[in-house]
Image (tube, rainbow, N blue to C red):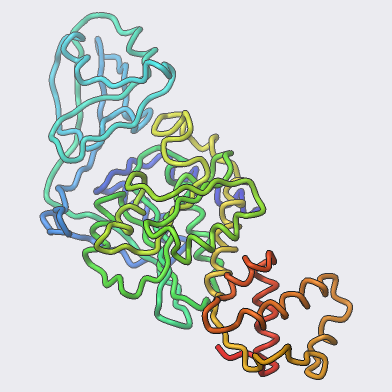
Length: 416
């Protein structure tokens, strides 16, 4: 099976599960992810104080429907989007005129079912297509939501790839959305493959699979972030749009520079930070101010199917998943090999020929670029410029600059 098809199959498998910020749907999701990665799963009890928040009661649901004369006209079994997330239990009968206050539709997209939640206000509701609502006759409707809100826990998981150093790069995905494929099961699938592809990295890579907002806040409350040097939030990773990178709050963090370099030669957009969107806003809150950006394809709320039943596996393509993964891998390669060096022969240009460096380029198709990269590395290796600075200044691929630095270091001309 191809890489893209493999990721797409994982999206399809995860898609039907009824996830929320707590509950068995999150556990089932993490169990499937755990078939691919070794996970450390954490359960944080209801009532635990996490920064300015408190872990809420756990929500689980077994069934829900609206029925007329014994026939279900809105059915949770057909789509878990039909129930407002965190709806309290209901079992009653009411006329359509009263029921309408609990029904949510998208009049401008009449064939789609919206995604709605009410995590922190006790209420209930159903979501349905506007076309379905328009066809409902007057009458007394049976309304059932077989759910529970009870003390339990919030569940999140981590997968750690040990590096040569304990400084960390975090890769974060939210796992709280129900049947929404691009947002964010596509991000989860890309994160899984990225984790599997890492072998003896320089940094330690920590993959965080947590519910949005409250999950990231819980992780931040329970962990020492001093070791976090870089980070990336993955979301909306599989639609047909071009890639979009949202900068960290700092705007000039190394991850921001890395993604700008990696994306330079492909269609993309770079956006400045705003405190709206995914969990980058938690990692970049002023008390932490971590160097964490966000990588998506079409960004938050930017495609018509966003937070609707239209965000199904058909919206996600294997080709887009592979493209997103490729950029992530290239970003990791730059992060892991970016260094500052000092030129040990800074007075005049050192003689490269007597050290065999010119001969090492013989026959290479990129010999000119490789030679130019050596000269740039020697010139800017003053302890102030890192290799990414040099690649940007020289307008050369980072890989060429890193290879030149390795050759010069081995020849005794550079010191890390």
